[in-house]
View 1 (cartoon, helix red, strand yellow):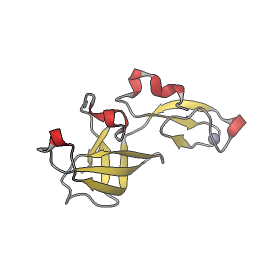
View 2 (tube, protein in one colour):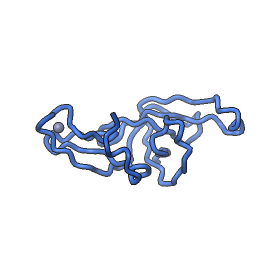
View 3 (spheres, helix red, strand yellow):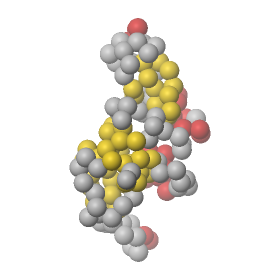
Length: 129
Ligand SMILES: [Zn+2]
């Protein structure tokens, strides 16, 4: 079941998660309940920094037929500095990406191209040098 947070438009471009005030854990996507504290959960919404590092990645070569001109792109599993993991597109050259590379959320908006469901709400990441 989708937490109610996901239905709100404002979360499409901001990286908003939740933090449990009781134990200090951060969650992204946002959760209504802390799985550690359960009934003692004290959930607050927080805007995440958008900084993190690459844990793993995949270079995707096979674009759909109508996007053949598009270059290969990178889908990365990123560990945010607050702790949660997020899967998102990483915008850089495939030969630049490395495990442990510092990245940050890109501030540009990307319209509706996240319809495929792989890329959460259009959030993309870029190298943070
Ligand atoms: Zn907790």
